[in-house]
Amino acid sequence: MRFARDRGGGLPLLTMVALALASTSTQAQEPSSASPSPLAQQLIAQLDSQDAYERQKAFVQLEALREPATAPMVRSYLKSREPQTRAFSVRALAAIEGLQSVPTVLDILQRDRNPQVRVAAVLALEPLRDPASTPVVIKALRDRKAEVRMAAVDVLSRLEDPHARAAILLRWKRERHRDVRRVLEDALKRMGITPP
Image (cartoon, rainbow, N blue to C red; front, side, top):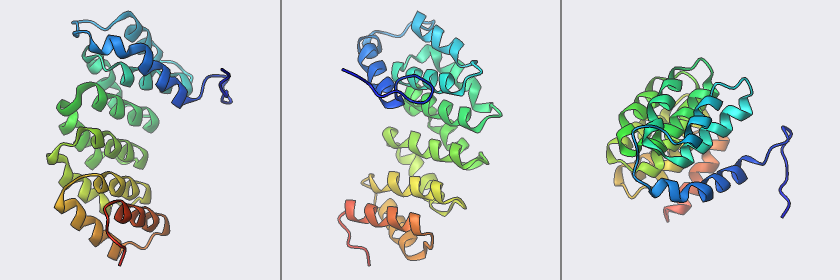
């Protein structure tokens, strides 16, 4: 089987995630130990690479490993000067810590100045489905950046929450940005509501 290669000569990111999940599915089921596995240690060392692609790949693989012992190291990158690094670390942290990461992710969603990081925080909250995060994601519907609003609409439309539903309908009435309106329209259809 041949894989398409990206410009950097590596496998496409989605393929890497699938391979990482397949190769680590047995490791993820093993009880966690006090220290990271040898593979996780290698990935942690890769987080300091000068190559942005290698750092991204390491975060994605750590996210797939979900080893609790790696959380403190991943957490340290939440304060990085690089928005892309913060975005990858928030996604990885949510996958590794699960519900325990919700307060940190919510804080990042509310305080980080970079929209890429706020989008990552919204998307990191989706699989956790913590009811405490719904009001903060609803507030993200009013974010000044369209990409954050679009991510919030997408996440809220997948929840079975009447407040999320009402917030999406209200956003539909007020939203002026064409791309956000498209996402809103898809969300309303997904929820079984005909756009007014």
